[in-house]
Image (cartoon, rainbow, N blue to C red; front, top):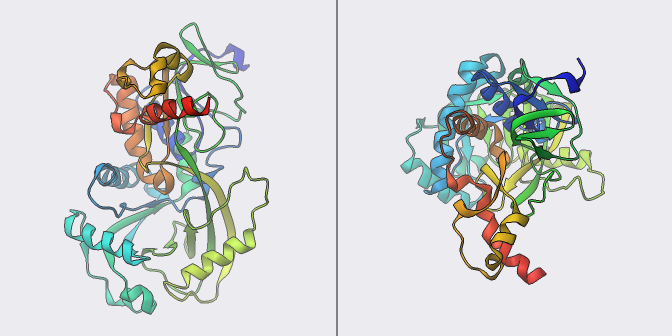
Length: 383
Protein backbone atom coordinates (compact mmCIF):
# COMPACT_ATOMS: atom_id res chain seq x y z
CA UNK A 1 0.00 0.00 0.00
CA UNK A 2 1.41 3.49 -0.84
CA UNK A 3 2.38 5.45 2.27
CA UNK A 4 0.01 8.25 1.27
CA UNK A 5 -2.94 5.82 1.61
CA UNK A 6 -2.01 4.78 5.17
CA UNK A 7 -4.30 6.20 7.85
CA UNK A 8 -2.75 8.25 10.67
CA UNK A 9 -0.80 6.52 13.40
CA UNK A 10 -1.16 7.20 17.10
CA UNK A 11 2.60 7.58 17.48
CA UNK A 12 5.59 7.93 15.18
CA UNK A 13 8.93 6.97 16.76
CA UNK A 14 12.04 8.25 14.97
CA UNK A 15 15.17 6.30 15.76
CA UNK A 16 15.32 2.49 16.02
CA UNK A 17 17.99 2.08 18.67
CA UNK A 18 17.10 0.41 21.94
CA UNK A 19 15.14 3.42 23.24
CA UNK A 20 13.14 3.72 20.04
CA UNK A 21 12.48 -0.02 19.73
CA UNK A 22 11.52 -0.38 23.38
CA UNK A 23 9.23 2.65 23.17
CA UNK A 24 7.59 1.29 20.03
CA UNK A 25 7.17 -2.15 21.64
CA UNK A 26 5.68 -0.75 24.86
CA UNK A 27 3.26 1.60 23.10
CA UNK A 28 2.25 -1.06 20.56
CA UNK A 29 1.68 -3.58 23.36
CA UNK A 30 -0.62 -1.04 25.01
CA UNK A 31 -2.80 -1.00 21.90
CA UNK A 32 -1.50 2.06 20.05
CA UNK A 33 -0.79 2.10 16.33
CA UNK A 34 2.92 2.83 16.04
CA UNK A 35 5.28 3.63 13.14
CA UNK A 36 9.02 3.21 13.70
CA UNK A 37 11.47 5.05 11.43
CA UNK A 38 15.23 4.74 10.98
CA UNK A 39 17.20 5.45 7.85
CA UNK A 40 19.83 2.77 8.54
CA UNK A 41 17.71 -0.02 9.99
CA UNK A 42 16.99 -1.44 13.43
CA UNK A 43 19.84 -1.28 15.98
CA UNK A 44 22.20 -0.10 13.24
CA UNK A 45 24.10 2.42 15.38
CA UNK A 46 25.31 2.58 18.96
CA UNK A 47 22.66 0.20 20.28
CA UNK A 48 23.71 -2.55 17.91
CA UNK A 49 27.32 -2.12 19.02
CA UNK A 50 26.47 -2.18 22.72
CA UNK A 51 27.50 -4.94 25.08
CA UNK A 52 23.88 -4.69 26.30
CA UNK A 53 24.67 -5.51 29.91
CA UNK A 54 21.89 -5.32 32.48
CA UNK A 55 24.13 -4.00 35.22
CA UNK A 56 23.57 -1.59 38.11
CA UNK A 57 25.41 1.70 37.95
CA UNK A 58 28.02 1.94 40.68
CA UNK A 59 27.54 5.44 42.04
CA UNK A 60 27.09 7.32 45.27
CA UNK A 61 23.75 8.48 46.63
CA UNK A 62 21.78 10.92 44.51
CA UNK A 63 19.11 11.24 41.84
CA UNK A 64 21.01 9.19 39.29
CA UNK A 65 21.56 6.29 41.70
CA UNK A 66 17.86 6.16 42.59
CA UNK A 67 16.82 6.15 38.94
CA UNK A 68 19.39 3.55 37.96
CA UNK A 69 18.50 1.24 40.87
CA UNK A 70 14.85 1.25 39.85
CA UNK A 71 15.69 0.94 36.16
CA UNK A 72 18.03 -2.00 36.78
CA UNK A 73 15.33 -3.99 38.59
CA UNK A 74 12.74 -3.19 35.91
CA UNK A 75 15.15 -4.12 33.10
CA UNK A 76 15.98 -7.53 34.59
CA UNK A 77 12.28 -8.33 34.91
CA UNK A 78 11.48 -6.96 31.44
CA UNK A 79 14.05 -8.93 29.44
CA UNK A 80 13.81 -12.20 31.38
CA UNK A 81 10.00 -12.12 31.15
CA UNK A 82 9.40 -10.91 27.59
CA UNK A 83 12.62 -11.85 25.76
CA UNK A 84 14.24 -14.80 27.55
CA UNK A 85 15.52 -16.20 24.26
CA UNK A 86 17.72 -13.11 23.86
CA UNK A 87 18.76 -12.86 27.52
CA UNK A 88 21.63 -14.63 29.27
CA UNK A 89 21.47 -14.49 33.08
CA UNK A 90 24.90 -14.71 34.73
CA UNK A 91 26.61 -13.43 37.89
CA UNK A 92 28.27 -10.04 37.49
CA UNK A 93 31.65 -8.99 38.88
CA UNK A 94 32.35 -5.25 38.88
CA UNK A 95 36.00 -4.41 39.58
CA UNK A 96 37.14 -0.84 40.26
CA UNK A 97 39.53 0.47 37.62
CA UNK A 98 40.99 3.23 39.81
CA UNK A 99 41.24 4.22 43.50
CA UNK A 100 38.48 6.80 42.98
CA UNK A 101 36.25 4.13 41.46
CA UNK A 102 37.17 1.89 44.38
CA UNK A 103 35.70 4.42 46.82
CA UNK A 104 32.42 4.31 44.88
CA UNK A 105 32.41 0.51 44.92
CA UNK A 106 32.95 0.33 48.68
CA UNK A 107 30.25 2.94 49.32
CA UNK A 108 27.85 1.12 46.99
CA UNK A 109 28.47 -2.24 48.70
CA UNK A 110 27.40 -0.83 52.05
CA UNK A 111 24.28 0.92 50.74
CA UNK A 112 22.81 -1.31 48.03
CA UNK A 113 19.97 -3.73 48.53
CA UNK A 114 20.95 -5.68 45.40
CA UNK A 115 22.05 -9.16 46.42
CA UNK A 116 25.83 -9.62 46.33
CA UNK A 117 28.30 -12.06 47.84
CA UNK A 118 31.97 -13.07 47.96
CA UNK A 119 33.75 -13.83 44.70
CA UNK A 120 33.83 -17.61 44.15
CA UNK A 121 37.29 -19.19 44.22
CA UNK A 122 36.94 -20.42 40.64
CA UNK A 123 36.61 -16.84 39.44
CA UNK A 124 39.33 -15.53 41.76
CA UNK A 125 41.84 -17.88 40.14
CA UNK A 126 41.13 -16.36 36.70
CA UNK A 127 41.86 -12.79 37.74
CA UNK A 128 45.09 -10.85 37.36
CA UNK A 129 46.84 -9.55 40.48
CA UNK A 130 45.59 -6.05 39.67
CA UNK A 131 41.99 -7.26 39.46
CA UNK A 132 42.29 -9.34 42.65
CA UNK A 133 43.67 -6.42 44.65
CA UNK A 134 41.12 -3.83 43.47
CA UNK A 135 37.83 -3.10 45.22
CA UNK A 136 35.04 -5.16 43.69
CA UNK A 137 31.46 -6.30 44.10
CA UNK A 138 30.05 -9.65 42.96
CA UNK A 139 26.34 -9.64 42.14
CA UNK A 140 24.59 -13.00 42.22
CA UNK A 141 22.44 -12.01 39.24
CA UNK A 142 23.31 -9.94 36.22
CA UNK A 143 22.39 -10.33 32.59
CA UNK A 144 23.46 -9.61 29.06
CA UNK A 145 21.10 -9.43 26.10
CA UNK A 146 21.61 -9.92 22.38
CA UNK A 147 21.47 -6.26 21.36
CA UNK A 148 20.42 -6.65 17.75
CA UNK A 149 18.26 -9.70 18.42
CA UNK A 150 16.20 -8.07 21.15
CA UNK A 151 15.79 -4.78 19.25
CA UNK A 152 14.49 -6.65 16.21
CA UNK A 153 12.18 -8.71 18.43
CA UNK A 154 10.79 -5.56 20.06
CA UNK A 155 10.10 -4.08 16.62
CA UNK A 156 8.06 -7.10 15.48
CA UNK A 157 4.44 -6.15 14.85
CA UNK A 158 5.33 -2.47 14.54
CA UNK A 159 5.28 -0.85 11.09
CA UNK A 160 8.91 -0.08 10.26
CA UNK A 161 9.97 2.43 7.60
CA UNK A 162 13.63 2.74 6.49
CA UNK A 163 13.32 6.47 5.75
CA UNK A 164 15.72 9.36 6.05
CA UNK A 165 13.89 12.12 7.92
CA UNK A 166 14.97 15.59 6.90
CA UNK A 167 12.04 17.71 8.04
CA UNK A 168 9.31 17.63 10.66
CA UNK A 169 6.03 19.47 10.21
CA UNK A 170 3.17 19.93 12.65
CA UNK A 171 -0.13 20.85 11.01
CA UNK A 172 -3.78 20.07 11.57
CA UNK A 173 -3.10 18.52 14.96
CA UNK A 174 -0.70 15.96 13.50
CA UNK A 175 3.02 15.52 13.03
CA UNK A 176 3.89 14.90 9.39
CA UNK A 177 7.03 12.87 8.68
CA UNK A 178 7.18 12.57 4.94
CA UNK A 179 3.80 11.07 4.07
CA UNK A 180 3.30 9.53 7.52
CA UNK A 181 1.09 11.24 10.09
CA UNK A 182 0.53 10.84 13.82
CA UNK A 183 -0.78 12.84 16.75
CA UNK A 184 2.29 12.00 18.86
CA UNK A 185 5.93 12.10 17.86
CA UNK A 186 8.78 10.49 19.83
CA UNK A 187 12.35 11.50 18.99
CA UNK A 188 14.91 8.86 19.86
CA UNK A 189 17.79 9.78 17.58
CA UNK A 190 20.69 9.66 20.01
CA UNK A 191 23.65 11.92 19.31
CA UNK A 192 22.98 12.14 15.59
CA UNK A 193 22.09 15.50 13.97
CA UNK A 194 18.99 17.09 15.46
CA UNK A 195 15.82 17.44 13.41
CA UNK A 196 14.64 20.58 15.23
CA UNK A 197 16.36 23.77 16.46
CA UNK A 198 16.98 22.41 19.96
CA UNK A 199 20.58 23.47 20.45
CA UNK A 200 19.99 23.82 24.18
CA UNK A 201 19.78 20.03 24.60
CA UNK A 202 23.06 19.04 26.21
CA UNK A 203 24.08 15.87 24.38
CA UNK A 204 27.52 14.39 23.93
CA UNK A 205 28.43 11.62 21.55
CA UNK A 206 30.23 8.57 22.96
CA UNK A 207 31.85 6.19 20.51
CA UNK A 208 31.61 2.51 21.35
CA UNK A 209 33.50 -0.49 20.01
CA UNK A 210 32.78 -4.13 20.79
CA UNK A 211 34.39 -7.28 19.48
CA UNK A 212 33.02 -10.81 19.55
CA UNK A 213 35.74 -13.42 20.01
CA UNK A 214 36.28 -17.11 20.46
CA UNK A 215 38.67 -18.09 23.26
CA UNK A 216 39.61 -21.29 25.02
CA UNK A 217 39.34 -19.43 28.34
CA UNK A 218 36.04 -20.15 30.06
CA UNK A 219 34.32 -16.94 31.23
CA UNK A 220 31.84 -17.93 33.97
CA UNK A 221 30.44 -14.47 34.70
CA UNK A 222 30.09 -10.95 33.33
CA UNK A 223 33.16 -8.86 34.13
CA UNK A 224 33.35 -5.07 34.24
CA UNK A 225 36.83 -3.62 34.84
CA UNK A 226 38.81 -1.51 32.37
CA UNK A 227 36.55 -2.95 29.69
CA UNK A 228 33.61 -5.35 29.81
CA UNK A 229 34.21 -9.06 29.18
CA UNK A 230 31.23 -11.34 28.98
CA UNK A 231 29.81 -14.60 27.70
CA UNK A 232 26.98 -14.01 25.26
CA UNK A 233 23.72 -15.65 24.26
CA UNK A 234 25.67 -17.29 21.42
CA UNK A 235 27.36 -20.45 22.71
CA UNK A 236 31.16 -20.17 22.89
CA UNK A 237 31.31 -16.48 21.95
CA UNK A 238 32.71 -13.85 24.32
CA UNK A 239 32.14 -10.10 23.91
CA UNK A 240 34.69 -7.44 24.85
CA UNK A 241 33.59 -3.82 24.70
CA UNK A 242 34.04 -0.30 25.96
CA UNK A 243 31.96 2.84 25.80
CA UNK A 244 33.99 5.57 27.44
CA UNK A 245 37.53 4.41 26.68
CA UNK A 246 37.45 4.59 22.88
CA UNK A 247 37.17 8.23 21.85
CA UNK A 248 36.19 8.97 18.29
CA UNK A 249 33.55 11.02 16.47
CA UNK A 250 32.12 9.84 13.15
CA UNK A 251 31.51 13.53 12.34
CA UNK A 252 35.25 14.37 12.50
CA UNK A 253 35.87 13.35 8.91
CA UNK A 254 38.59 10.91 10.01
CA UNK A 255 38.33 7.18 9.46
CA UNK A 256 38.13 5.07 12.59
CA UNK A 257 41.13 2.76 13.07
CA UNK A 258 39.43 -0.59 13.72
CA UNK A 259 42.69 -2.45 14.25
CA UNK A 260 43.85 0.02 16.87
CA UNK A 261 40.45 -0.15 18.57
CA UNK A 262 40.69 -3.94 18.74
CA UNK A 263 44.18 -3.78 20.20
CA UNK A 264 43.07 -1.33 22.90
CA UNK A 265 40.18 -3.60 23.88
CA UNK A 266 42.37 -6.71 24.05
CA UNK A 267 45.12 -4.90 25.95
CA UNK A 268 42.68 -3.62 28.55
CA UNK A 269 40.98 -7.00 28.81
CA UNK A 270 44.39 -8.54 29.61
CA UNK A 271 44.58 -6.29 32.67
CA UNK A 272 41.67 -8.29 34.11
CA UNK A 273 42.50 -11.86 33.08
CA UNK A 274 44.40 -13.88 30.49
CA UNK A 275 42.44 -14.88 27.39
CA UNK A 276 43.95 -17.82 25.51
CA UNK A 277 43.70 -18.77 21.82
CA UNK A 278 41.79 -15.67 20.74
CA UNK A 279 40.00 -15.61 17.41
CA UNK A 280 38.29 -12.31 16.57
CA UNK A 281 34.96 -12.92 14.88
CA UNK A 282 33.32 -9.54 14.38
CA UNK A 283 33.51 -5.84 15.20
CA UNK A 284 30.55 -3.69 16.21
CA UNK A 285 30.85 0.09 16.38
CA UNK A 286 28.50 3.00 16.87
CA UNK A 287 27.77 6.32 18.51
CA UNK A 288 25.85 6.46 21.78
CA UNK A 289 24.57 9.61 23.41
CA UNK A 290 24.94 10.87 26.94
CA UNK A 291 23.90 14.07 28.63
CA UNK A 292 26.21 16.69 30.06
CA UNK A 293 24.84 16.00 33.55
CA UNK A 294 24.81 12.18 33.08
CA UNK A 295 21.05 11.88 33.64
CA UNK A 296 18.94 10.42 30.82
CA UNK A 297 16.32 12.53 29.07
CA UNK A 298 12.60 11.94 28.84
CA UNK A 299 10.27 14.84 28.25
CA UNK A 300 8.80 17.49 26.00
CA UNK A 301 10.99 19.76 23.93
CA UNK A 302 10.96 23.53 24.30
CA UNK A 303 10.32 25.64 21.23
CA UNK A 304 13.30 27.89 21.93
CA UNK A 305 12.47 30.66 19.45
CA UNK A 306 8.85 31.01 20.59
CA UNK A 307 9.78 30.87 24.28
CA UNK A 308 12.48 33.53 24.01
CA UNK A 309 10.15 35.72 21.98
CA UNK A 310 7.62 35.52 24.81
CA UNK A 311 10.19 35.78 27.62
CA UNK A 312 13.15 37.77 26.21
CA UNK A 313 14.35 38.60 29.73
CA UNK A 314 15.43 34.93 30.10
CA UNK A 315 18.49 35.94 28.11
CA UNK A 316 19.43 38.21 30.98
CA UNK A 317 19.13 35.48 33.55
CA UNK A 318 15.59 36.12 34.80
CA UNK A 319 13.91 32.90 35.92
CA UNK A 320 10.77 31.61 34.27
CA UNK A 321 9.05 28.50 35.56
CA UNK A 322 9.44 25.61 33.11
CA UNK A 323 5.66 25.17 33.02
CA UNK A 324 5.50 28.57 31.28
CA UNK A 325 7.83 27.59 28.43
CA UNK A 326 6.30 27.03 25.01
CA UNK A 327 6.69 23.39 23.99
CA UNK A 328 6.33 21.61 20.68
CA UNK A 329 2.89 19.93 20.80
CA UNK A 330 2.75 16.18 21.53
CA UNK A 331 6.48 15.80 21.01
CA UNK A 332 8.61 13.80 23.44
CA UNK A 333 12.34 13.09 23.45
CA UNK A 334 13.82 9.93 24.92
CA UNK A 335 17.60 10.06 24.86
CA UNK A 336 20.99 10.30 26.60
CA UNK A 337 21.23 6.86 28.19
CA UNK A 338 24.99 6.67 27.60
CA UNK A 339 26.40 3.21 28.24
CA UNK A 340 23.25 2.11 30.08
CA UNK A 341 20.80 2.16 27.18
CA UNK A 342 19.56 -1.39 27.67
CA UNK A 343 19.10 -0.83 31.40
CA UNK A 344 17.23 2.44 31.01
CA UNK A 345 15.10 1.67 27.93
CA UNK A 346 12.31 -0.32 29.68
CA UNK A 347 12.19 2.24 32.52
CA UNK A 348 11.91 5.21 30.15
CA UNK A 349 9.50 3.46 27.75
CA UNK A 350 7.14 2.54 30.60
CA UNK A 351 6.95 6.16 31.75
CA UNK A 352 6.54 7.37 28.17
CA UNK A 353 3.54 5.03 27.80
CA UNK A 354 2.02 6.27 31.08
CA UNK A 355 2.45 9.85 29.85
CA UNK A 356 0.98 9.36 26.37
CA UNK A 357 -1.86 7.02 27.36
CA UNK A 358 -2.59 8.01 30.95
CA UNK A 359 -1.43 11.65 30.95
CA UNK A 360 0.79 10.86 33.94
CA UNK A 361 3.31 13.65 34.44
CA UNK A 362 6.90 12.91 33.51
CA UNK A 363 9.68 13.35 36.06
CA UNK A 364 10.91 16.96 35.64
CA UNK A 365 14.40 15.82 36.64
CA UNK A 366 14.63 14.01 33.29
CA UNK A 367 13.17 16.80 31.16
CA UNK A 368 15.39 18.12 28.34
CA UNK A 369 14.11 21.58 29.33
CA UNK A 370 16.47 21.48 32.32
CA UNK A 371 19.22 22.72 29.99
CA UNK A 372 17.19 25.57 28.52
CA UNK A 373 17.66 28.46 31.06
CA UNK A 374 21.46 28.27 31.05
CA UNK A 375 21.53 28.03 27.25
CA UNK A 376 19.20 31.05 26.94
CA UNK A 377 21.44 33.12 29.20
CA UNK A 378 24.58 32.04 27.41
CA UNK A 379 22.96 32.82 24.06
CA UNK A 380 22.69 36.50 25.00
CA UNK A 381 26.46 36.67 25.41
CA UNK A 382 26.99 35.03 22.03
CA UNK A 383 24.62 37.42 20.21
